[in-house]
Length: 206
Image 1 (cartoon, rainbow, N blue to C red):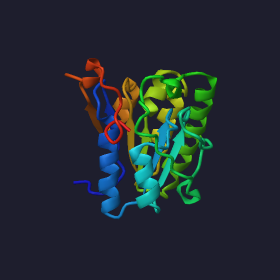
Image 2: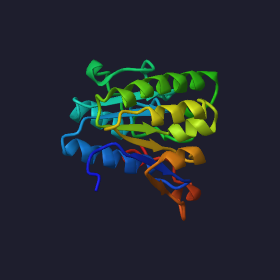
Image 3: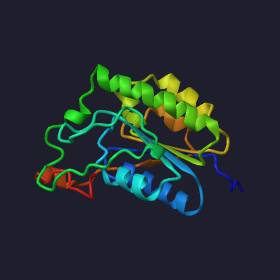
Image 4: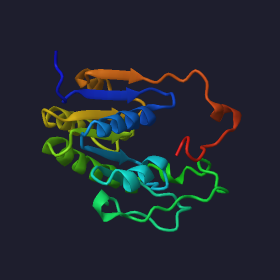
């Protein structure tokens, strides 16, 4: 039985919980002494709970964001700021409703450039052997919207370090990515409070 690291996980589907599950796995790994790196594609809001937790409580691990920041933030991150640079954490005011404008998810040439930079760093991190666990959050979405090339992602997966546990999240995972995975979990939406008009909530969705 294989007990060492080095497997490939995919969390996909239209239901809520893909990033949440992956972050839970990363937290578990860190608790067991593994060094982890999270790279978020198409996300740049560093007011999110997971980003704040990493920066404040997990300094020996890394968290990189590549995406548009929230226009309601007073300051923005550069495309890549490693954990050791300690960027200021700005939390959105309680009165601000997140999830209505969707500006941060605008898929244009700027977003494509962010995704290209994210993939460049993902290749380095996944292949370096520096990290035991690497999470590529929303990379499936980046492929689906053609922000990055599928073949580049497949090559990255095939060339990852042999002992690096790799996690890929995002809906609409490509069948070829699923073929390479050792574990595939599909989050199926049965019911969602968003349909009742409940917007993203601090501490739950971000």
